[in-house]
Length: 82
Image 1: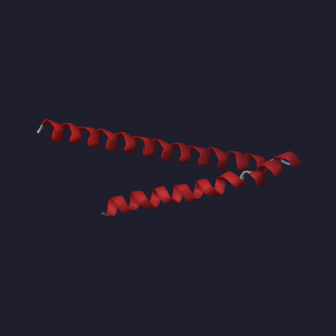
Image 2: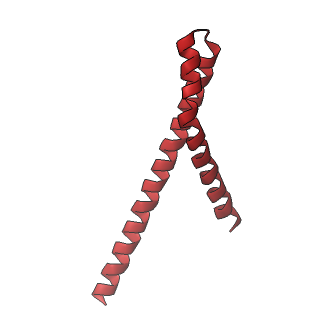
Image 3: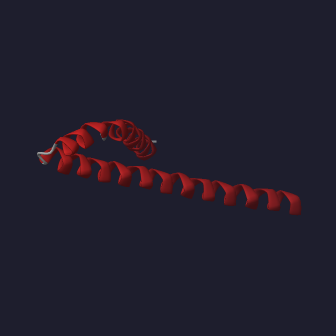
């Protein structure tokens, strides 16, 4: 009896902690995407060669983060619909 309760408590705690870790990683990804997009827009508005180069090179980080954002949105939408 005690071992079953202990196992259940450990499972619940590990599930809750893993959900919070995933949520915080998702939040970090979305915030990084927003910061990258803002930096890209500001760099593309500038007239210098280095700023245009920075704007083009930020696509390396924007595209994967955008796909992560879409994945998060799809999972949230499926969770709401389920």
